[in-house]
Image 1 (cartoon, rainbow, N blue to C red):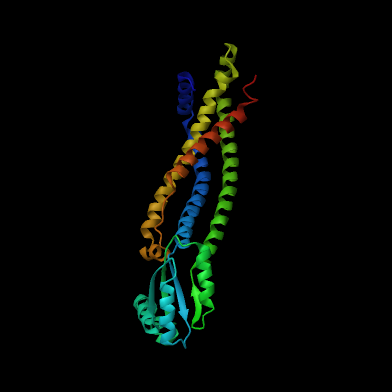
Image 2: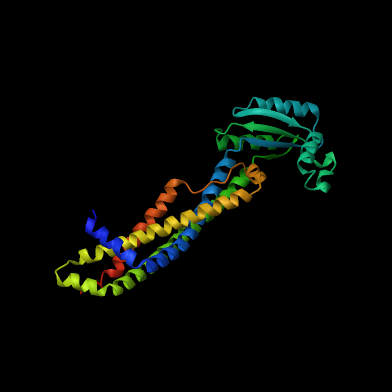
Length: 294
């Protein structure tokens, strides 16, 4: 536990050297912004991955020569499959109409495509709790049917997003190392400079019998506060940027991916602040280990 004297001396030192500490906090905030931005991207990519991993739908594209009897038999068979909650037949004309309604204001050339350019399909609603193995088995059996041309379960998108998430996690780990080095360098240099400016005070304390711990503790508190404030400032800046960017995003983008952008979860934000404080304290203690022992 920190004594009242330690916190009071730390506060007095930070007020006296506020320009030096403000510059240190700014430098740390820049480093933590990089880490927070990477974590923010990973958080949203993971949400999209989880959403598409349980998309709850599949499309069975039919061959051009499929007869109505084959289509009816396939629909009836799919309706009896456990985990399939809905079966809907979409003809080439219906697919053309749905596509034209979405694209008529965006691209007139695409909207003018003939109905033959759109394959007929059977749209399936799949229960989110349906095991992936059962879904893969169903897809394999449907792909072998003579009336079926292709089956799309959107798992390929999930696999690509999984690779992106893994890459984002690796990048975040690398940035965490960069932040670690930045905190150690910035806080260490700040504490050494602060100690030099307060050399007379330290020497007086040593002359009257103060222990090394008594002398170093206020500097350790200052380093911890610097690290925590740097992380907190980075989170605040990211929050402002997130609100500005989210307000300018087209609402259709969220509708396309099925997930609204979200900010850092509070455990991650609190963890960043705690990490900043811990690293700041360690950096201050390491930088003063030899300088205080007179």
